[in-house]
Amino acid sequence: MPDGTKLLIIDDDQTLVNALRLYLSKEGYQVLTAANGLEGLQTLYNERPDIVLLDIMMPKLDGWEVCRRIREMSDVPVIMLTARDQENDRVMGLKMGADDYISKPFSLKELEARLEAVLRRTQAPTPVRGRLLYCDEYLTIDADRWEVRRNGELVDLTPTELRLLLVLAENAGRVVSHQQLLEQVWGSEYVDETDYTKLFIWRLRQKIEPDPANPRYILTERGLGYRFARGGGAPRSEPAS
Picture 1 (cartoon, rainbow, N blue to C red):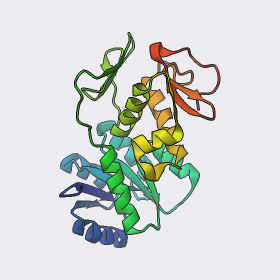
Picture 2 (picture 1 turned 180 degrees about the vertical axis):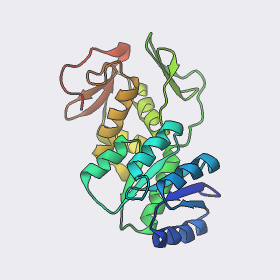
Picture 3 (picture 1 turned 45 degrees about the vertical axis):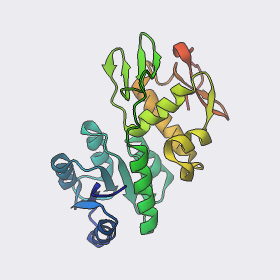
Picture 4 (picture 1 turned 120 degrees about the vertical axis):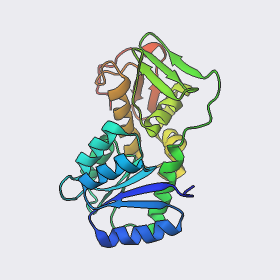
């Protein structure tokens, strides 16, 4: 997969950055580096990397703000790096638009596997002609063009968000479990990471639902998983977790 894949590392820990550059360059990545958030955003704009490794604790701009700004201009996959293994950091990173999260210290092999997994799932699939998965007066899901529209306007989804929505729409009317979603969208190595489905469902609802707090399309089936409702379903009065 690497074969010249352009990787941007935004981290002020120069010792770590040097080790990552040495290892990942040998694995075929073209490694770019930035020592702070502002420099990282500038490098992202100029170089258009294929994937970003982003530290949270940095001078000038922290990783949260950098991730927010990245998502304003790009759907490039982002893996957050942090020395703090806290649940709220993980939730925050995924809500801000990160694709994955890895805590320091980590093994280089583990990081390499995470990079490959994220790159694999953010690649566009081969289009299948005639695959208009869903269309009503409000929402259109087109698997052929790999795009989603609400009220005729193109919705800005990351590749992972789009894959998740496509899996749900392909199974419209049927409950898809957390484990099924994790395996089909993220890969078998993520089947225990139920926070990923919850947070990415939350992100999808913010982007496609008329009222995210009372979803009509992506419905929660308590204790089971999620169901895409044909015809926009009926809004739920209970919390949409």
